[in-house]
Image 1 (cartoon, rainbow, N blue to C red):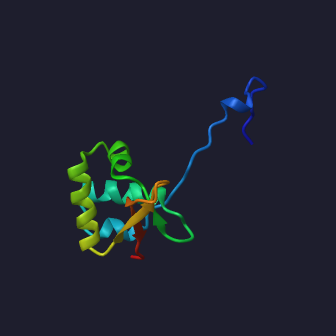
Image 2 (image 1 turned 90 degrees about the vertical axis):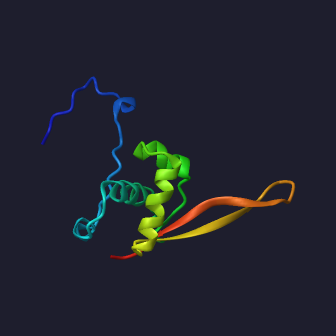
Length: 109
């Protein structure tokens, strides 16, 4: 069992989020960009519903890609039937209906 220093304070403890990619994803011939966007979506995924709602900007920040490049890889993942993409709507306080973030559903492989 590892020893813990007495000088370690609770504020120094960092939580690590762990997520897994299915082994089969590496047998599908995906490009590095496809894999990067897919991994980002898997990281954000609700493991009960298989859905996530990251913004394109958020995916850009996590992958280091431009918005156009992220959109291209999202289209490719959708064409390969690895994800479903649906637009969402939000209602403002003024009652206006506006476009929300995209809802991604990770499909089983």
